[in-house]
Length: 96
Image (tube, rainbow, N blue to C red):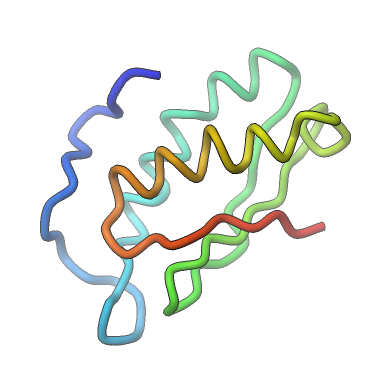
């Protein structure tokens, strides 16, 4: 995957509560950068929550919601991109 536009891992305005706040705008930007790959296979994702501990909770939609490879998509695709470009992200979890 190519680097999302304007997403260098740097200090940014903090928008979530807590001492190690997560930049929610950057989270959405990263999700928007991976969304075309999900949509190409008939899927998508919805941001449900970002905890103060850096856990991003996503709902996989469409084909991604029932795909046997969704764990790989979530962990090796989306989670890795979020960890790389958004300081403070520790994990991505799927919610139903």
